[in-house]
Length: 395
Ligand code: FEO
Image 1: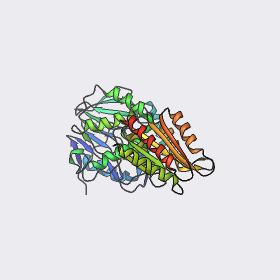
Image 2: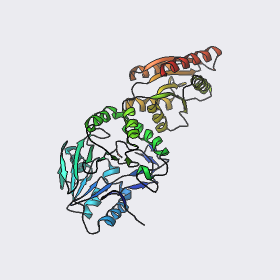
Image 3: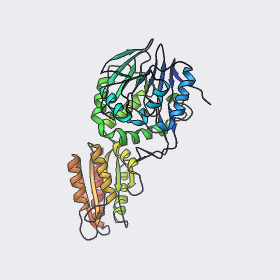
Image 4: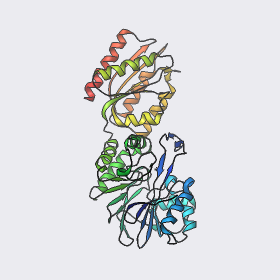
């Protein structure tokens, strides 16, 4: 069964849904799956924008042939070389040997390195244009909006921005591909935070540079490599989510993350969560041993306040907390208001280590509480004071 999705006149969606992969990049859970988006522009020349994961190559080619019949694809634009978007290139070349691969110098060198493809390139630079009949395509280099070779393609005629990973999200496209036709968008908003924090998160300044570069374009549709095609009503919200996340502007709310072996640090976490809520501030509470780090990172990117609790373990941090803070450091999360707490049995180092971490990150430290063994009344009050300071800073 195949029934091509026409987005606008002569522009088709030829992407696929992946409901099988458990972990994106072999790390990030995909409870709602993921789509690999590709687009076919049929004009005097036929242009494909990106390809799909190699596991879906046959389905991908079949969709293209269903639309084109005996016509050939003249160009494939590689906006992003990561294999979830480029791994079907070899099969595409086998099917259309005369196809020209459109990319910038970095793309071309990566394609040669990854796939040993050495010819058939059409190199473009920032601001270059390719006329394919009615449609004019303009290319904008947006390096590090995930990888260094990333570029975006703007269709001047239909005002569509093919945005590579930018404005993307996890989640399969169920029954439709355009936002207005999807039954509910709820899962995609949530998945956008998970996607941004885990995939693009480190590159906030690159996203901001891209925003500046694209500021003068009149954009009516955003067609990313993952998730729904966003049209006019939803564009402000999509852009706002990416803008705020890339500025590290957290929303009003506090993430409390803790590790606990025998419940003492957990009791402190419960006290903190209650204290914050009683101040009228939203709280998300994560047991680091239960929540996946991909979900914790998404919440930390979303909210302004962060309070981490760790027991002292082998004279250091609880290993799962150490792993989490490493992930935060790797992503260079900025501008968080931070508090720390922890417990120990015979010698405490966890709170000191969390303070050092906050200092390294350049975050505002609003307080710490350290408990020897089980929670005392005095330290329970200190935790509530920490909550009050956090709440004042957040407000
Ligand atoms: Fe979906 Fe950065 O690749």
